[in-house]
Image (cartoon, rainbow, N blue to C red):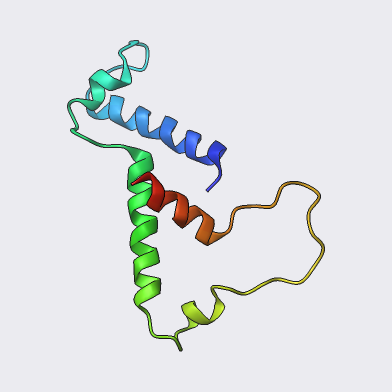
Length: 99
């Protein structure tokens, strides 16, 4: 997931939190004050937790499952001229480090 997509999702999450707390969008209440009502909740941590849960499921699969067969597949073709995207394992490694 790219950072811009994550920021849009967090913005939408904040709108939902304001709606759940019956706070109009015109009020300038800090998000930390509204999040106290919901308890320790972080959108980024939820995504990280589900990603690590999926990683654990993939690692527990048998070696002949389709998921394990195709997880290290390399697509032939031209390289992009920009910085390469992170691989699945790089994202999972950063999630494990941030725990």
